[in-house]
Length: 110
Image (cartoon, rainbow, N blue to C red):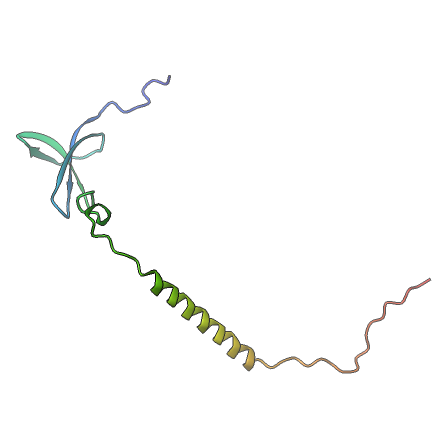
């Protein structure tokens, strides 16, 4: 087995959610210079912007996505693109084929 593979500076660290103010005491190697006192003991402090106490998935305040509205927007974009292609094709003059132009013949030699 390899030696010195895992860090040896695991220590209790307080993670504080900036949105909720909730704190979690866990063991971590996260570097920090701030400290806080929790239950009369001073711990290193790591501030996080979102955690399980403020994330919508865990709090039950998750937004439902309007799937039907997305499909309608997609169909409207496709219809507008098709109409734009038709207008562009109608405005573009068609090249006329030359009538009576000699065709290259592929006669066998020999």
